[in-house]
Length: 368
Image 1: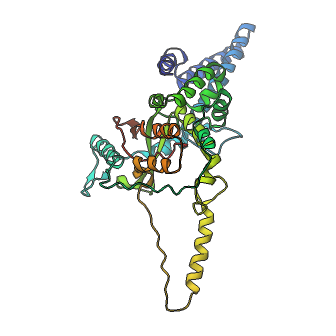
Image 2 (image 1 turned 90 degrees about the vertical axis):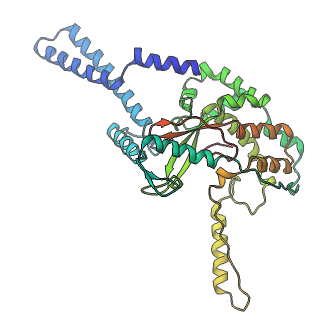
Image 3 (image 1 turned 135 degrees about the horizontal axis):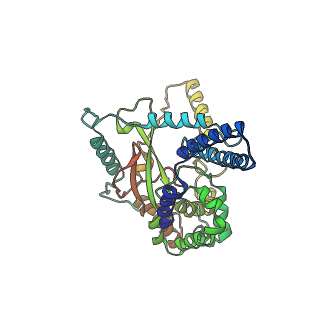
């Protein structure tokens, strides 16, 4: 895939060429041919005009697809495409996402591009660096017992058809990971790449150390406020390579079958057929009961918001939790390989920061 990526870049420059330049050249050629055919039409010139018009149609379709990929608009699944709409969305998105100045930790405004980029990387290096606990408490094995033969299915090596099913269900033009390949590439070229791709995915289950080679992650910054003024005003979405997503999705699909047995009914998220809205209804009933309660004995409601909860999760805590849930050793090793072998680069104003390696945290955007 890395070799193909290099060859595609070379082919794009030397053979395929610039779509916009080709479109303008074709428009000029067509205009000349139309003038010739108006004055003195001939079979050869008319045939040439027809060929150029078909070539222009193909080029316009390619331009449409190019702009469609750029703005990340999700609602235009079917129906007419609109190049101008996608173009405006892309420009608006670029302008909105460009970070010109931010406050540093001392409250000073920083507008130097290099300093800003270093500040962004430093922020996430600190966020994803573990603060080792001084006294680690062994978790009690309080999870319900699930048959070990069932739990072993979590790390089951998928067959080719299962890998293909995961790929085909993916959204084709979601933002790609570090390798630059969309899921659409694998969907359209499955007859060519399917066997090799499936073999590699299967090898990751039998030898989890292989996951490291596909586990590079780009951190895309999403603003939480209208005009962000500090790094705390951004949340991150992790852009993972399609290969890694397939490995993680296969594990997650197997894990889903036992989640209702492992997770207490009070936990309403992350479990099939449970919804966070159930908790909202319970909360409303609780507040209503509190407001109508009479008597001397009071009731207190406590709301706890854990800052950057995903990013701060201890890998040691995660591993101990999986052990407490009685997952087989091979399954734990596979899951921990997905979590711990990643590397990060922050997407910053169209570029990427240097690579750094986390020691805690989970990625929002990882299927697992």
